[in-house]
Amino acid sequence: MTTDLSAIPAGVLVALVVLAAAALALDIVALVDLYRRPAALLAFGNKWIWLVLILFLNLLGPILYLLLGRKPAPRAEATGQSGPAGPARVTDVVDKLYGPPDNSEQQ
Image (spheres, rainbow, N blue to C red):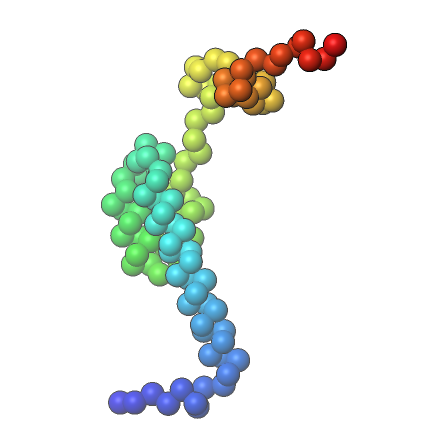
C-alpha cells in the first residue's frame, strides 16, 4: 500500500504539519515540567500516572496535565519563611554581591 501525498491538498498538508508540531511542542513542555516538578505538587502525587497519560493520550494528555495535574507551589508566607518581599530582597542580593553602598561619594 503506497500513499500518494500529491493527492492531498497543500493547505491540508500544511495544517497537519502545524498540528503535529504543536502536539510535539506541547508534549515536550509537559514532559519537562513533569520532570522538574516534585511529586508533592502533582494531582494524584504520582509522576508515573501523568507520564502514561501524557505519552498515550496524544494531544489530550499534555493538556490535562498542564490544566489539572499541577498544584501551585506553596507561597513563602504559607511555609513559615520570614523576610522581606519584593524590592527589599533585590537590595539584599545587591548588598551581598557588591557590599553596602558607600555614602561618602554622595557629598
